[in-house]
Amino acid sequence: MGVFRFNFTANFANASLLREKMKTVLNSAGLPTRQQRQLVHVTDELFSNAVNYGSSSKEDQIEIEIQVSPEKIEIAVSDTGKIGQPFDSQQLQTHLNQFNGTALNPLQTFGRGLGLIVKQWTDKVTVEKSRLGGTKIMVIKYLR
Image 1 (cartoon, rainbow, N blue to C red):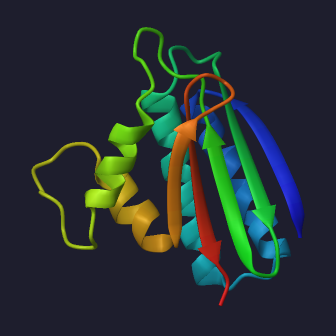
Image 2 (cartoon, rainbow, N blue to C red):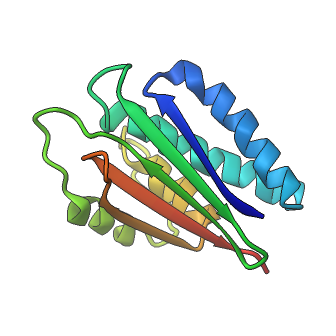
C-alpha cells in the first residue's frame, strides 16, 4: 500500500522497465495475477500513448504515479505534450466516453487502445492537463 512514482524519458526502451516496476507494485499489493496483468497492460498502453502522442523528443519526461489502497488502484500517466499541438482534454474525454464496450471499427488504425484496453479493464478514466504541460490520464480500478 502507498504511493509509487516513476519518471522515465519518452523512449519505448523504457517500457519493459516500467512493466517490471508495475508487476512489483501490483504483486506487493496482493492482486490476483489476472488483475495484475490487465493493469500492467493498461499502464503500458498509457505509456505508449504518452511516447507516441504526448512527447516531442526522447528526452521529454513521462511521469507515472500509482496509488495503492485496500479499496482501489489509481494509475496516472502524465506527459509534456507535443510542441505546436495544443492540449485538448475534452476531445480525448469525448473519445473515451463514446466507447460503450462494443467493437470499434476494425479498419481504424488509431484510438482503439484506450477504448478496448483501458476502458474495459478499469472502472474510471479521466483526462486533464498535466503539470508537465501535456496530458494526464488517470485510471481507477476498484478492488472488489
